[in-house]
Length: 294
Image (cartoon, rainbow, N blue to C red):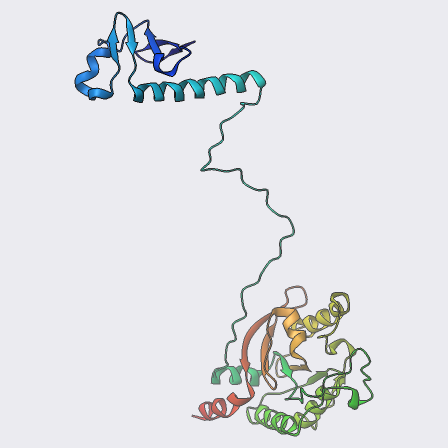
């Protein structure tokens, strides 16, 4: 078999015994016989005699490797499977997985500043208020919660009612007008509304019910209604307030506010949605009001 390079054409002949492996030269390296390379490559260069180059052990090993590689490529070409070399350092890439779950970035809460209260006093905002603290030792009797029987629901605590009364009082001290009050039909939401806004007539909306134990299909209309109430424009001089549950907001935007937290949104219209502005945890009201008076 003949292999051609830039300056050498060599015919490889192999004897039956490894020790008799010879290389018959039909030409020489450019301008120099193989035996003349002793000075450049030392004892590892092949020795030449009578037109036959006798290979040292290292050269015989290299010859076997070269022959094996050439023979393998020749056989692969004959079988039609040597279409392209594959590098072990560059393995085939797996096809992308369609429908892979997307993980949204964690929600970052923005605490309101005194200027937030001044903006709310001018109106035009949608507010979301989570009900007050409840007794977690008495959970909802799912799936048999009776909306007319508060004994089947997780109850608002005495401290919860007091906290919501303070939140409502702080909203009034900040001169924040509330013209619409939409509430969940759960007892803890209704009792929170009564404590915080005793003079405002609330609108009970079944589509604001607690969705923590619902399937995705059951959640869909609740999430859609929450989005609608936060997106619809609000006239200047008034604000819309939704009093409901943390899981509902979590399913809508990945935010789980603490009990008694007021969340501020700027409505952008039903097509565009809403913009999250800031949050006012219940414990922050005193400091905001004091700073706002300076």
